[in-house]
Length: 311
Length: 322
Image (cartoon, rainbow over all chains, first blue to last red; front, side, top):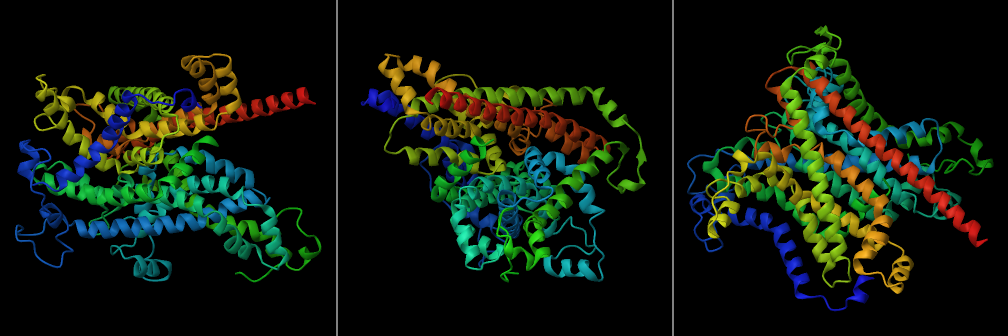
């Protein structure tokens, strides 16, 4: 390796690394610092890092779910707390559903031979490139018209009782509607990435389970799943990230009560007088991905490389 | 559900057991696939078909699709004659290709430079993937602040060294958007090319070193050619993703000033929601889809070709040895 030839790295090398680190986390730090500043401090330019940190922006942002009333606020304008709860529900539920469905499908594609297998695996691969913008028009049309359920009985009533939503039970405007499109959007990627992990599970283990009398579902859930945990971790992080960060489709489907955080940020980003508050909401939106990155970077990198190298 | 039925893990599974519950056996794979297949059919393939159908119709958001009028290829033709669509198309192209080109050069270059056993390498990689994990909306927010004319970070830095201000988002909007994307996605290329570098066969590198190849020669004649397959797939993946970018641009410039940063994805959203021309937006989506389909097919073809070549080489090597 190169290190053997050049055992002593020169200072320029370390300077380069320091610069790279500064460049990659600088904007993130800027976000954090600005979210702790008053608006005057953000725009005045004086100080830089020398300022009195304040949590006032966070209080303003979270005013609708705080247990006390922040003194500086006369009324609660940004309903960030509700959007935050919506984002959490949508991201968690869609991640869980995607993973369960995805790993079962991936297992079948790897281990069984059945009619339609090839076309399924091919179409899974092909739809990976579909951008959300392409789905915007049909999803908007379908979720508002064709996918409306009858309000009074049957599936429609159950859907409304379970997921809430407006009077006319269309998928648009419910958590369920947003979750459905996120699950569908993420499934191809999850199926495809988990396949590369399931292939590596030794077949002998599954056969041993079968000899012991386990059915296919038992074999899958008890034997295979624990062995592909790293793959599941990677897949869940990527799915969560997309569901958590997505703006376009959510903005087409959500109404006032199901609005997610990215929508709220885009809607409020143009008003520059609430600069600090917007930075605080941005920071709150960025925290879960940052935590994932810090604690599971290995899984993320594994997932990324598995996703690309096996193209 | 978990009742022990006679299992059939593979096609050649135990034949004597098969008779006990033949129906369930045959259905097992379908039971595994069904949930995912149903969701994808309902919320992915059906919408795509719906969109293609809708692209031939004069479609207003207040109508359901069956009430609309069939207009044939009118939407497509109208777009082809629309200068705004042309501009949007070229902005998308310039954005996607310049972003990918710069990111490839930077990412691969950095990977080549940092490919050594470094104590803190894993920390470094963790910090590098941070930008791409954060919501594009937030990235746009931060960069809009940094590009701001009066109190933005860049202009303050320019002022500090005595240079004149630059009106980033006003006069160089496309460049600003490209810079933000490069910041966010260069690490992707870096991480993948680093992984590719570290899985290169050591024997080839050692042989080159023993033969006295300089560092530069090693890179040009050994490392890059060996990395090429992974690099090309990485590049195509990134290119496909570059056509999906929307939120960063939406927050940074909103597509403006004028149409200077209005990429296709953004134009689709505006056509559908502001101009309320769903048919036209569907036709535009279809153009974008076809474009991405070509790229994806290119990627497939390339991987297939690469696999075939690898097999042939391995076969040839075995022949030589034997």
